[in-house]
Amino acid sequence: MGILYKDIEYDGLYEGYEEKNHFQEKGEEGERKVRDELVNSLSDSYSILNSVYTRTEEGDFTEIDHIVLHPKFILCIETKYYSGELDVIDAETWGKRSNNGEYTKIDSPQQQAVHHAYSLKSYLESIGIHMTIYTIVVLVNHKSSSYNRDTDQFYKSECPVIFKKDLAHLIEIIEKQSAGSYPVQHSLNEIADQIIDEHEGIKSSQLFWYKKLAMKDNDREAQYQLGKMYLSGYYQEEGRLVQVKQNEKAAIFWLSKASKKGHKLARQSIRQHFQN
Image (cartoon, rainbow, N blue to C red; front, top):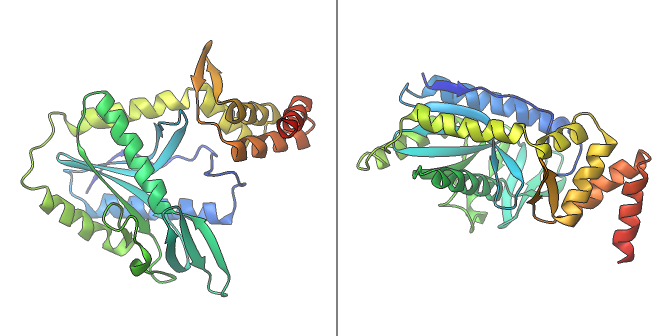
């Protein structure tokens, strides 16, 4: 069995700028299924970390669903519990046709997964750990979803899309491909500890608590602070300014939520933004 180094935890945060909904709850169920598949199908030469935060180059942070550590490589996994027919529209967008025929556009989970792997690689290299990192998207339910690989002209080799039933086989292929390479000069426990240290550092940051209060507790002051941060491109952390990438969509989303709860400064910020 694979060694479960860090289990799944849910902090009440969600991706994007929409309220947590049924589909995100199904996503959590999918993550548990993939976690169980990894633990039960891999040998004890693997360590498995779930629900890991890592910083991004934009000054924000993101969550990686699963990280699989092997002495010769790392695998980052983005899990999706989709149903219906799936295809790739462009580098940033997928199309999803539901069982009732409704067609919607969704953010590309491949782009998300590649971004996660890049963020993790940047962090590890900054502390002297250089490893090959692979990334994949795992679709949990092969019985209720289909994926048209012929439409993927963007991430086919960089980030393949597979079903959960094929996960163990793919990892076996990666391990065989890595047979001729040398193990890194760090133990899996040492690498896992460094990843967890980064994760815990993020959870103790001001930005994390703004997001948790804004999303989980619906706190209007935290929503205002998030909106102001994304509008200005910085926030304060222990008396110092930390830069983040400006994001008008996120800024207006959070300022609007705070404004609807009667936050006067949030309402004023929105008015000033659109007057400029």
